[in-house]
Image 1: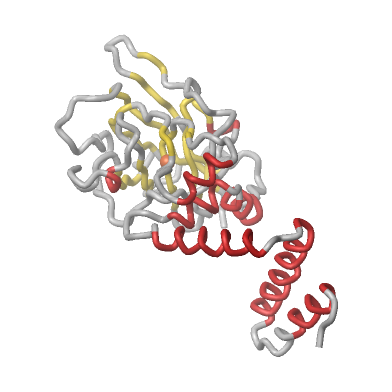
Image 2 (image 1 turned 30 degrees about the vertical axis):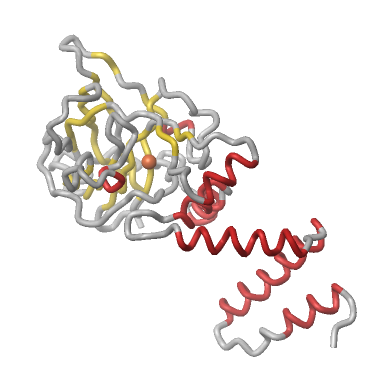
Length: 277
Ligand SMILES: [Fe+2]
């Protein structure tokens, strides 16, 4: 029976010794070691422990089919970006860098053709833009038939799943690269947006004097048979918050410029570079 803090920690760690799955054993024992160490370091009070329980309870209650408050919590603590770095060290510096998935990806976006628009609403808002480029390997060889799953906010800073009145599938789409690796879609320029801050995570950000804003970006997951898929963003070079993205998702290589065209629209060109598996 433990009589000191460190003896208690050792006893709890030992209670997982009979875990059959070695990875589960490693994770649980390390979790106990670090969470005990955290509590000891900050000398966690009874009230603070209860505050944390209530915070996590509220975080769980905030989750729904279209709201993932735990991902927001992970994102704002930098855990999502850390896990991304751990697991997707790019290995080849010619490859497109990954960044976080975020909470707004949905399956089964509309399947569209080269050059189609991902705008599925009638409101005339936003700056029209063409996004185009190629999917290539690290030597620049085109990858035909690559799947590009893209999604972004509307000009009001909201994803379609945040808007109950919005047409399903607005500003998201699935494309396949052509034989020359080319892809293209019509859209509007993305805008900076605050992550949903009407829940526990927003409360946390306000308590610590942090803003909830993300730099403007277009999300993409690009995959092709025989290649490692990449989950990433393209950031707008002229966006605010590139240096203080609230979820720590910005990487320099992912920042690109929307170039004004003579017809008043914008052009963003970006090549996705995949690494062979
Ligand atoms: Fe986003």
